[in-house]
Image (cartoon, rainbow, N blue to C red):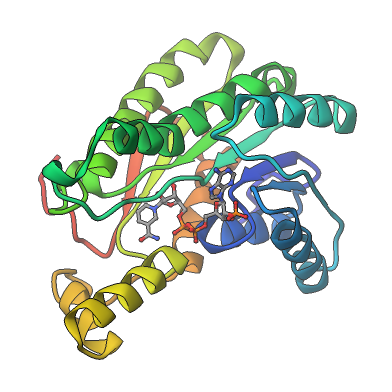
Length: 263
Ligand SMILES: NC(=O)c1ccc[n+]([C@@H]2O[C@H](COP(=O)([O-])OP(=O)(O)OC[C@H]3O[C@@H](n4cnc5c(N)ncnc54)[C@H](OP(=O)(O)O)[C@@H]3O)[C@@H](O)[C@H]2O)c1
């Protein structure tokens, strides 16, 4: 299937590892001109080199911490020097924090809000004019299955990722006059550093082998296992392609079936 994105310009934010990295790789493989962004310049430079080696095409990169408005402003200026238009924006920054209500003070709530919501808001704002110039821009945001089946111990990300579903619904309609589609992909439990770090920590706390923690969390998933980031990336690329030209305002689960709600 030709996804129609060859030669288009794509920016993936949160692309030095995990789901963002695999989404960037898949876009590059489909022929997009790729720009990647994340916080740590050394990690990002290495990710760009790995992608270039894997796919055999050049990759541009610019480091920015999306929780910092000044970094995103600098990213915007850099982008405007690099390209006349942007066709695809993927925002893959965010994460969950295991904590109960009583363990979360105002600072923890605001920090998670910056990470899960404002980072994406800032990146959309910074790229909107370039996306308008595409004439058919697409935005894909990484959400989470959590808001569709709120996980215990993950209060802040359940709440803030639900906000992203509302963001997608609202912006998809608001950006229609610019012919920009806005969708999100909602992963379930996916084996990235987010989970490998958590598994190590929980195994140490409970004095059990990491495999026991993996089994415990995998047991709740209808497919019986964690997802891999390369199993999330194809949905990101599909929504970013022209094959989904009648899809906007949607949050699509790629979660091994863990969110059991009927809607
Ligand atoms: N893995 C899961 O089970 C799961 C489940 C549901 C939803 N999701 C969502 O999927 C998305 C990707 O998750 P992931 O598991 O792939 O994450 P990950 O493996 O932790 O990778 C996160 C990426 O974002 C970058 N990043 C982190 N903070 C940043 C910041 N402030 N500014 C710019 N870049 C930043 C990281 O690079 P640097 O450290 O260099 O900045 C890295 O490239 C997130 O939105 C997450 O909430 C993941």
